[in-house]
Length: 520
Ligand SMILES: NC(=O)C1=CN([C@@H]2O[C@H](COP(=O)(O)OP(=O)(O)OC[C@H]3O[C@@H](n4cnc5c(N)ncnc54)[C@H](O)[C@@H]3O)[C@@H](O)[C@H]2O)C=CC1
Image (tube, rainbow, N blue to C red; front, side):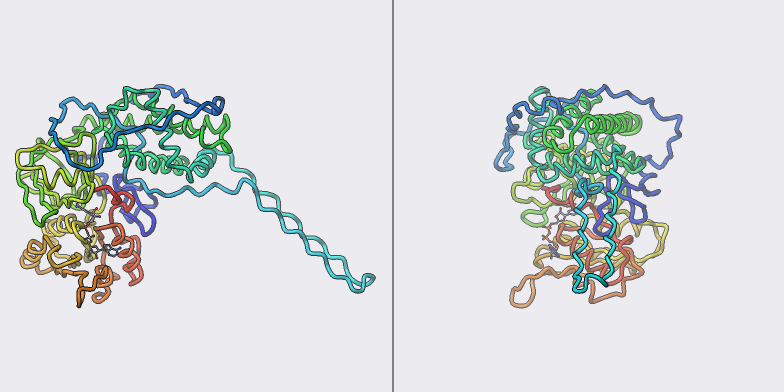
């Protein structure tokens, strides 16, 4: 969930009312803990992380760079084999990789070289005898240099940010060169993985001096990495190569102190993630196997897939999960739950097959009843705040209607009458694949109104009409807003809603960065 223009990592449980990126909502906290607050004494003892020995650090920066990794990248998602899921988790991914981390560039702590002070202009003196001599303005002293660890980390990040892609490639090259055994544990295609790592790194670095925020974020990250089979011994290998890559590409800001700051930061990061994963092991599986029990094609490229998890799967309406199919091991994509929790324990997802979408094509065109997929733990905080009576204004674009439907069901289950107004957007009439369900819900719930908004206008003109359509109704300033759909719709929707008076802290949606490419 986000504040406007300021993404919250929804896997971390932030709410619009939290103070920062990774603030934790009471509601999400409860869900994280299975409804119970764990007593401190229940915590498992910390597992010490092995020391990190930076690879390719400042001292040997001049060495030849390793060759770029050559991950095989199949051209099209046309799986031909259906290997069974290995029962023993053979996956591992580097610990600093979360899709929900905002790709926000860190602001440099301050300019290292202050701009030159302006020189006083020469005063014209037509009558030199009488003219007073001006006192030159005092040159302000340069601000004291911030040499805290956090500032050192931010300086490195600022230096590598413009060449992020290169640094990430170098990091993986180093990792697979030094630890070739780890290559098999990553997905065949490393495209999404690369961005995630860098974004997670940015977040950790920019929040290094904000311990509570960082801890909450990393705790979720550590738990989420269980499904990859990440083990404590993987962390030093990743850390060493990460620091090696940074030192190689940030020559201006790298020195012994900077290296020490990175080693300390990464050690802390690893420790929190390892401990979080160990604690989570006590109460939840790393992933759930889930059998497909129904597969319904709604259009030629949209399917509603219903699965039965092999054990209870607690979640909240509005959340999402990572899904892995048996055809593309270690490739996980996120989908929202399309229903509130059901008494029969079944879960539904709305999946649109997108071009070159590995998981989406497998789920739409290949998965059938009887197949078993995997689910990661639930995440996300686009959930209903049941502590208020505010109405809900919901914008669902395309398959983004899935979590909106879950939210409506959630309000219905709570039996507390609140106005819910849904605007359901699609390009054409025939793209409104779930309109019948939504209209049925409207019929049975007098507090619910559903308005389809189709882009195709008179004479076949197309325009993105969804956010604007909301302005024709209202007023909305007492409503909580929920947006779900393509990133462009979210961005424009947020601007529109703020423009018509909904405070940004009452506007909720999943991470835009995560949405980009996350469901393909
Ligand atoms: N399947 C799921 O569980 C979920 C999917 N999503 C996301 O929803 C999206 C659904 O994609 P499609 O069905 O292909 O939607 P689409 O591209 O057909 O668009 C759906 C609606 O969004 C509006 N829209 C699109 N771009 C816009 C823009 N730049 N400004 C304003 N409005 C815009 C359209 O006018 C239309 O009303 C995907 O990006 C997916 O990641 C989001 C949440 C859950």
